[in-house]
Length: 316
Image (cartoon, rainbow, N blue to C red; front, side):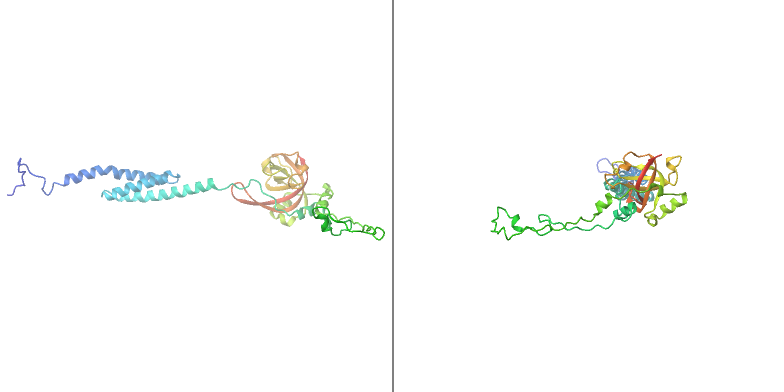
C-alpha cells in the first residue's frame, strides 16, 4: 500500500495530492457570491427605475459592469444573465427619457399670442362696403407747379451762373390746373361711416354653430354674439382679443362654448371700442365675420377658430 508523500523535514503529508485544490476553489466561490448578488440587485433596480432620467442609466451601467465581472469569475447563473438583459432595457428607457426631457427644456417657447392673418382688404370691405380703389397720384417734388422736372443745376453745390435773359421777351409760365388727388386706401378707411348696429342679425344656437363650423362660408356677415373675454392683455395687444362666445347670454362663464378671436380698430394700437374691457368680462358684441384664423397654442399644438371685426361692445 502506497503512502502519500511526506515532508522531508517534519514527515507530514504534503499538499501535492489530487484533492488539495478543492478547498481553495470552494472558498473562492463563497467570496464571489456577494458579487453575483450585488449584480442581480443593481440590475433589477435599473430596470425598475429605468424611466428616471440619468439615475436609471447610471444603475444600468453599474449592473452591466457587475454582471461582466461575475461572468469572468465563472459565477454567473441564468438569473444573472436575465438581470443583465433587464438592466440594458432600463438603461435604454432612461436614456430616452433623459433626451426627451432635455429637448423639452431646450425647445423654444411658442409665441403666446397669434398674429392675425385676415386680409385687411376683406375686413375694410366688410366694415363699410366698397370704398374705391386707391389711385397713384403723380407728384413732382422739387419741381414747378405743373409737375415738370426740376432743373438738375439747382441741386448742384454752390451758386450757378445765371444766363442773361431779356425781361421783355420772357413771359412767366402760367400755372396749370391742379386736380385734387383721388382718395387713397388710408383716406378711405378713415372716412368709412359707422355700421348700423340695428341691421346686425341675431343668431340662434344652430345659426352660430354653422358659422363656427365653416367661418370662411360666412365672410362679411354681420351678426350679434355674446361672450366672455378669455385673454386681453400685453401678450395679445390691446386690439386683439380671445373670446368664448354663444348665441345668447349664459349663466356661467364656462357655458360660452365656442373659442374665437376678434380684432378692433386698426388691429394694433388704435381701438377705443376695447379700451374699457379686461379679461373675464362678459360682453355683447356686434361683429362682421372675417373667416378663419390658425395659430399656435402655448402647449405646442395649433388650432383654427373663427375671426371677426368688432364694431361695438357692451358690458353685460
